Image 1 (cartoon, rainbow, N blue to C red):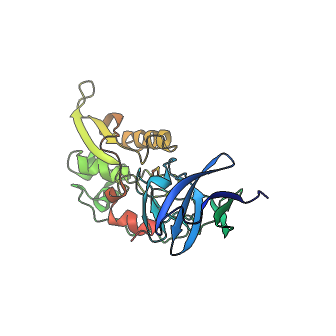
Image 2: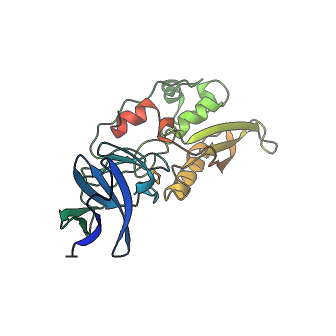
Image 3: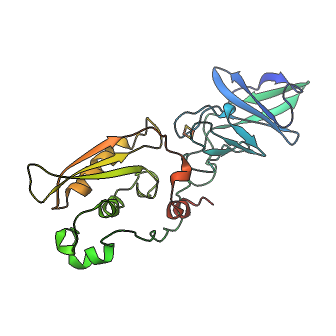
Amino acid sequence: MADFVRVIDVNGIPDPGKTLVEVEGDMIALFHVGGSYYAIDDVCTHDGGPLADGELRDHKIACPRHGAKFDIRTGAALSMPAIRPTRAHDVKVEDGGVWVRLRSEAGTGGPPLHGSLPMAAPAASTCCNPPAAREAAGADGGAAAGGPLCEDRVREMLKDVKDPELFVNIVDLGLIYGVTLTPAADAPGKQHVAVDMTMTSPACPAGPQLIADTKRVVGSSPEVSAVEVRIVMDPPWTPDRMTEAARDQLGIF
Ligand code: FES
């Protein structure tokens, strides 16, 4: 086990307050709240955001990049888009200083946010050709269901595409910025569908799968000639883009 390392004088941070320290080559966010000190990795588990730069409220630190919150006492991820804990470390006050001992592993920090939460009921549909009607008319939801293909129907299809870590569909996550339908020049009666999609972070590891699943799901409609997925990072995704259904599903209140 690593040794304790003195990182700062005991009066070196106001209460409440925070600072960044280095311990054995690792950057550690050190907090002073309610007379106690806490230390966690300066790394947001969503996409590496610098937690020490975030807003501190009580025992919660908010990642400055996309807003995920962590418990500074345990490292637990408290809100989307982070779902894994960051490492929390041992801290002691001795000889007028604050000492930190690195732990090798993150604690469980509680279950993943999506853990065993019940599945939320789907949000009310605004589709011009709602799911029940499409189901009655056939699994493909095609022209036989009545009415031409439209943006709402494409959005309904996209609810079959789920983030592989969060198990929430990309529409309710707020990842779909736009859907554009254009009559296909080379396929009379069919539509070219362009989907403007964002990611929860620029380096989202689920990105390739989400793009492929979007093309597969929308492209399976007999009314679609081709599917184009355009990745849009401006404006960046923020948690407030999620629907109530997604928040319920993730246990965010
Ligand atoms: S990097 Fe921290 S919330 Fe995205």
